[in-house]
Length: 419
Ligand code: HAM
Image (tube, rainbow, N blue to C red; front, side, top):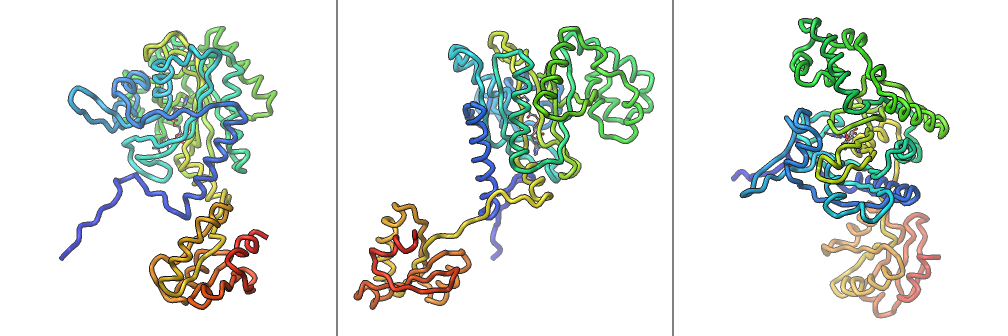
């Protein structure tokens, strides 16, 4: 009889012991860094109203037009969140966070979903950490956000990164620029790739995102948005660059960095790495001064970033960086017989209360198999318990690292292991 087996969906993976320790260590580092930057955590549901994402991220983006996981239940239209900024903007408005006064400095870690074609560094369920600084239009806020993002990579030791920087200006800038791009690309239409040709009339700025070879020479000579910035946008951008210099955060100007989400205004940035393959963006972000109003709030400037955790892990692997090693138990109880196993089960809570990591054999295996298991699990100590040991209250405590043995009473186990 053949058995039915099940697998995860394409582009979705299990995170297993052996790898999860890296994730846990990274999460601790993010929480600790956020604490020092004085950002507070926000957790929003993994599902949002489809209309929020369509409006927030933009109908014409790849994310909304092609990559959303959606379903309907009755009157309600659900989407698995493809990103975190529109949900945080929604939460800010819905929970009247503006009334708490000052700027809101929020960060998040969690799963996100995009129905993209999976490849290395690109999954359908992936994880991001990100931060949003809401309520300030100052260039200081932009630079604080970039500093927070880069601090994570610096602490981990991922150094070979480039911060790409651009300004997409205000809406008037973008209108003028879109027109300039259209005027430039239209006569070149027959030389453009099919993807770019499709974008020409709908959203010519997206042509700048093209990775197609035949588009590259055409792109290189295209007008640059930085030549179209209003005076205010230029001043803001100059201030951002000056502050990055003051903080010694290196950057590279990329006049064609447009980002794949429509809510951006002014500063846009991406952190890229040569070590993680063709999906080379570790993270990205920028200013989104109109989004909160777009989702029903008062006009509120904001800036943020988000980074892919899978891609960070790929970088760690490529660079040989280990964030944490799986650790074994302090004590493994090796038991002979049912009575000994019960005794161990009863003893472990007391030891655990004093901070020790304890485990035992849960399957009634032979002494030899248990010793092997203790070794495999990298236990620091094994305590061997049989009928005689229980009667005499004298146990063998084996130091698995030094291969030494001591005779101890029940009450001495903790002290000896902790010493
Ligand atoms: P994003 O550029 O779409 O921006 O995503 C940020 C990062 O998430 C990417 O640089 C990448 O590392 C990771 N990522 C995105 N899609 C995938 C995927 N399919 N598989 C693996 N990793 C992926 C945002 O999401 C904006 N919300 C960032 C932001 C925050 N802007 C302002 N505030």
